Length: 520
Image (cartoon, rainbow, N blue to C red; front, side, top):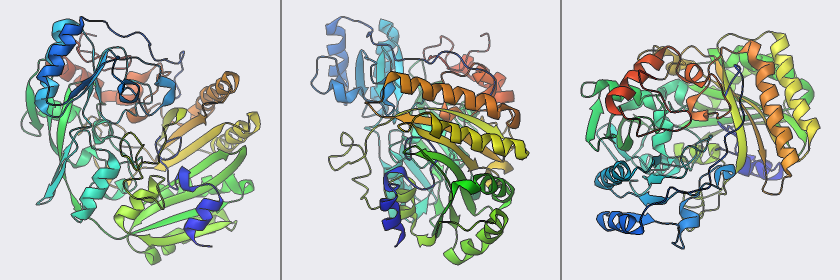
């Protein structure tokens, strides 16, 4: 049985292989939680004539609640936030459209809400104000070692167009995520240990700031604003319209997937924690303790910049340390684009199919319902921490067979950790790995079961807290996290607050976890 047949028979094709987030390929920490944020349902009202004037001024299109396309236009990836009713959605076709929308929002007291892919784990890419959507700005131009990428480009289209040019940038696994949100929050990906975070490969960006200025920011011009966009999180400083990245020649890749019996879960996690952070930079991997249809499973998967033979050799110390033979062992070569399709849960699909139907008529992907938290591990946990992780996932499996989720440990190190914590806004440069805990459910899951899942998520964070460093990944933004400012940004928060004060002194861009100004 080949790899594709195995994935289909195991029900894994739609769940991906080396996932970076919950709820298939798309989809934070110790320090306490508060009540979950829910999406508001009332729109911010305004005279219809004002909206008509904005619509007439735009090259793109403005979708109002009365429009037949409004129910689709307001959709975000995480379905629990689908109840939000924005006053309007502006599909901006150019930076000038963004400027008009921000001028309108300021003049009329409407909250602007930047949106690229709409994957905010906290629902912060929707709300009651004016959604400023950048998905119409989705061109990719690669030449001379750089790529200019529109802020609304989805990752699968980035991969498709860059691979046609024979180059890559390191980025995330979820195919429908927008490049803007990913980059601004850091951008961990399956070739990150070799090439760094997405934000580490950023050369410059164009951004419309709160006062309507269209600025180009790089290491020498508006350098603080450029720095803040390298991990400071989306929606804080303006609406980015395009990015310029350094590209790398697309290499040959090899992928691996190793499944083990659940009885070996502690051995697998312990061996992985010893092996993965010290593996050559060319190897990225994760260890997944997941619940599938009520059954706990343990799997390690990953990507190697190199040949399948090299990868097989590099895996031998890990396999020997586990001491239990895998029930499934795949190691094989892949092209760059095919690898990204597989890692995005799109094995066997075309690029067109690797979208939701509203994004592409051929799209076959669906949105999801999930909640997640994250934590960073900066020192190898003792056996008690490994046992706690395994027991926690077993507990999730025991609670309700309709809940999915678990713990995914993503390897850091390599090129990610060669950057100093203050060099970019992304401060988490000493981590061995990041733990993402998640629960997922369907549209028919009873509220009581969803509540059980959320309780497990909170309890899991508390249980694993002694073995983590108090940090959390800002791209897995967590509306229940109390100490989020320190967890996301650490020692970089004061500088981020100063950038906020400089470029958005009136707090035009604001949401529940937006960066405060220097006085706030």
